[in-house]
Image (cartoon, rainbow, N blue to C red; front, side, top):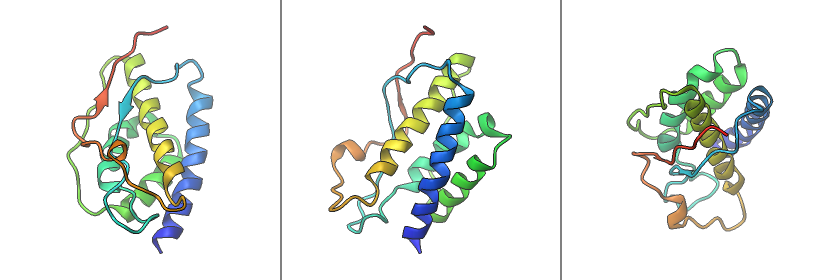
Length: 141
């Protein structure tokens, strides 16, 4: 069941990422940011830490009001959620908020690429405290 959800999540997220990149072509590659991707579950690919990831997607939801792809990603993440984590806030500055959205999408993309790989090994790099989100603001180019 969970591996089917993850497969659907990967597909929906791929569409969402492409859609955002086309919509926001002027947003530079985001700055340094990290999120907690995985739980310590010993059975990949079922170790995605949806509880830590969902607050970031809730925070960027307003940037995707007109798309079903975002709703699909959220629905799939909710199916994997174990417990609710604290909410996250988006920077107030318009450009910074776009950078934040891109950062969240890029980090989640990296997480999804690691899910289901052979002998997935959870390392300290994948277990970053989810709050506060490590976000290094960038200047507009």
